[in-house]
Amino acid sequence: MNRSRYMPVGEVCSSISDTYHEKGEMVTLINTSDVLEGRVLNHERVPNQNLKGQFKKAFQQGDILYSEIRPQNRRFAYVDFPPIDYIASTKLMVIRAKTDMVLPKYLYYFLKNSSTVAELQLLAETRSGTFPQITFTEVANLSIPVPPLAVQEIIVQTMQCLEDKIICNEQINDNLYTQAQLLFKQEFP
Image (tube, rainbow, N blue to C red; front, side):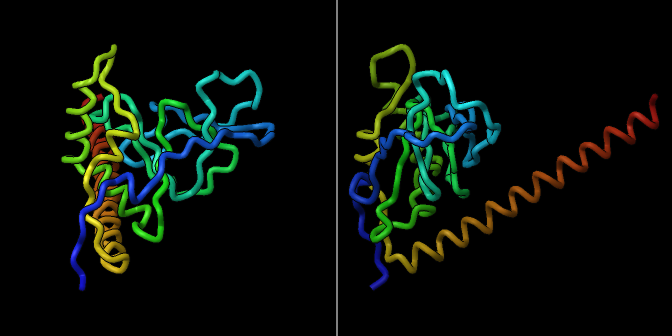
């Protein structure tokens, strides 16, 4: 039977609050501005000394970093590399899939889905405070379709193929734009 069942997100993943305890001389600090649309943007190493108090969370490959602030800004990332001596801000949720129930990348695609982001943004705006913010509780209460793992794998492969094509098209567009600018400058110095 290949039917999906619907479950609360909180039953298929956990919010991880592991504190970074390693003693690496150089570390990479990941803040909300360092993740966007699925990618970790910052890989710069800095000395592991006098770090701001917000940088505390350890995370691992396969985790999802998800900003608590303004979900509509799409500040989230799937960690697709071994994050050795990386430290996340406390303003990023570290979400880890329970892999016996859901594939990490399947969970990630659900959390980045436009309707999921819109629902989280709506919840964030209903909270009182200086800016729209969510907690893991709001994420955990969402309902996720959970098909068998084999079906999830097919969905992930399809989504990854589409995502790779989008990235390739963006690179082609960037290259064409650069070439057009060069031609324009040559034609009209």
